[in-house]
Image 1 (tube, helix red, strand yellow):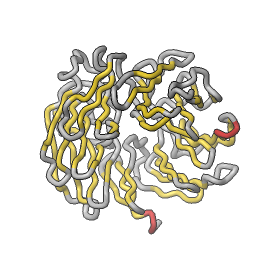
Image 2: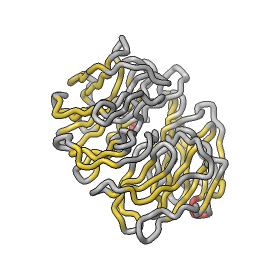
Image 3: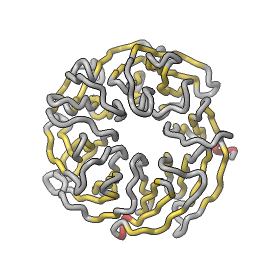
Length: 352
């Protein structure tokens, strides 16, 4: 492994898959390991040459679907491979196939979205801002003109009675028709310059978004599926540049230097904040109905999600080194696979 990595880990009952770089930093490398033993099953590597801010390692999480895995590199390489062997079924270049002449500073960060047999990707060209690829063949189903890339992942659902894809381009939030790619609506925030990294989330058919310049906002959908441009509620103090929040029982939780809890049901009202030495700018959160597992700087924190005050139930040091971890872990049953600076660890949470 080249280091702690940026992209998340994908896993099922038998294997785990993650992206990396080779020692020369000229190749993308994706590994598939046996979940029980950590033994390498296959490795996929291909040339991906360039220089990006924050390194060149893949940012996206691999997507497992039946007997296939979709791999996405930071330079726009998309590969569909067989999960058993890593053999390439089809491949695309978001740069070469859609007319991108210059690398984006942070590269391609969005995890491809699989919906209704389509793989949604965002090349970010003027003629192909968002594209749907046939998941079986890689052929273009539709492409939509628009803006450059945002850095969060897309989501899909039926909002305001309309099935749609929701996400960002470089400067706006938007919705796109799943079948045609037609852009249904566009909402620009009050202040420009957001990097649009945290992924939008849905709460009771409303849309929750959070960014570094415009804070945390809750929007409602109109009956025609468009988003009302004025937020229902705003909290300007919670403004993470990377962390995606989670919502449990009407409460929003997010890490940005501190752990913050807001009441969504009370208009994003502040509930509590907690400062801890293991928390910094970013942390991944895995939630159940009553617990939050927060991946801090080499440490796991287990929170009581139902408590009216901040309550850490337990904590576990996973890595000796104190380092900010960007790769989202994978949870399979009670097994948590987490990536550190020097390697992966598989922890059985039932035994801790």
